[in-house]
Amino acid sequence: MDRQRLSLLAHADHPIAAPLDDASVHQLLTRAVRRGDERVLDLGCGEGTWLLRALEAHPGATAEGVDVSSPALERARQLAQEAGVAERLTLHRTEADDFSPERPFDLVLSVGATHAFGGLLSTLQAARRHLAPGGTVLVGDAYWQSEPSAVARELLGEYEDLPRTVAKVTAEGWTPTYAHLSTRHELDDYEWCWTGSLSRWALDHPENPDSALALEAAAEHRDGWLTEYRDSFGFVCLLLRRAAD
Image 1 (cartoon, rainbow, N blue to C red):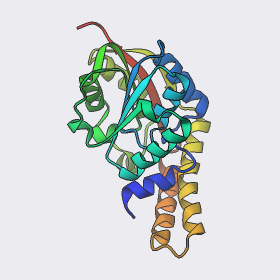
Image 2: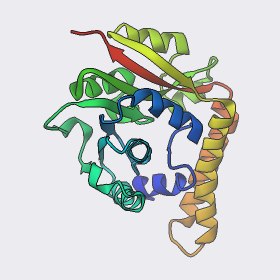
Image 3: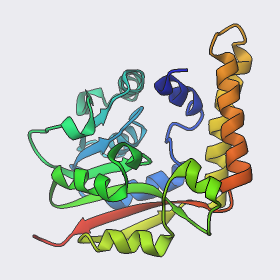
């Protein structure tokens, strides 16, 4: 199955596409968008859920989203029309490294998309290129809550524990102004939604040639989560600013 289509199906019941609930998203955006007229950028915006939430809460804000998935961006356009914020949202189908805006942004988001940049620090470097002086970055990435198994590292990558994660960010000149650690409920709800949404689609469409592959992908993901990384995986969202250069 096409990876972009699989992602859309798996996130059908969890459009935030990261282990956070609605209240956590609202709290982070409230702290990140303070004036109400900010220019907001999401690098790896997917269906645009973070941007839509920001625009709905702040009528004076404008936003741009960057992603490589045509289906996700089309869904974002549809949702923006339904929410009445389409005139304040601009979407770009391009690689994030190729994105070259005319003006910098007050808030740059990248939550759950650091893999697209090669890691957390690379993501922050990309965000910094688009950040206005005094602006804020909201980045979300994984960390290890406890020592992971070798299989967990192989499945998810080379993350670090929370103190080392924050230390390497601050060593690059960033100052955390707030953070949210996903709760056990948020982490579990995300995984059950991911595997459950994909499984439900497959069971509802047995005639589709991708049905068996979707069921297999959901089962493999669920097994890896429950047996290998559920007890060691964590997710942190950091609000970051820089001192004046």
